[in-house]
Length: 233
Image (tube, rainbow, N blue to C red; front, side, top):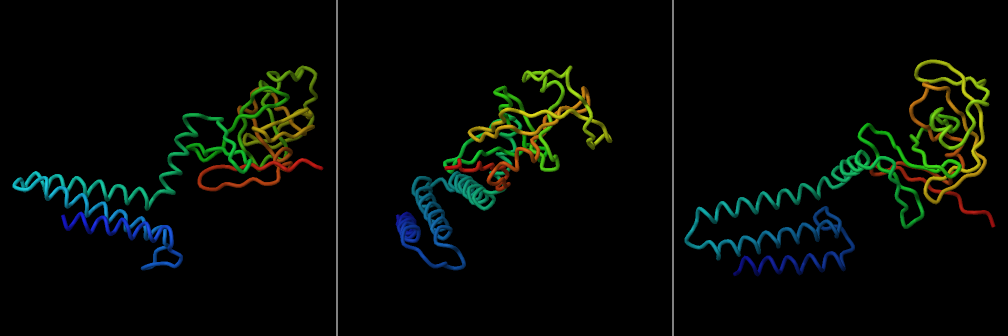
């Protein structure tokens, strides 16, 4: 019972540290110190319960104690590497649901990183759904020939006379202007865009002719965040 009592005392100290702590304790911030105390309290309570429950069955008690120790170390490890674990989880979600975007409470559009390190997200070009790769190296938004046709652009009437450089060398593209291009609630009008020739490009590129319209964009914690400009008043 005294082990359980120590455990509950540690729980009480953890609550005090979390609520009223202002200065670091033993090199830890109050929140981290409170978590350490709470984990220690859980360990004492679990140990006291096992000693009482397994009295007379020492071998079974040791096995149960080792199991609890492993669980405790696993929880501590997950907390210690929570940023890395979150990054892996976000990458998995990016692979399972490519093109998925979320809108944060701050009004930002959030996109998870894919396993290959890129950011792919859904957008609406002239009101039609397309997928784009985030590409700050592209000066303009670039559409594949197939995507341009899908959103109603008459590709047969395009003049392919704009020189561009691609991974496969230099080629030419056609210049068009999208009436609207939107990612979630962020929308830009009259966006300068290029259309690639058939077979030259296999992914649409979200280039700087759209990204320059944003208030900001940044990568943090394995996600891309896009923030639109406030409407003019």
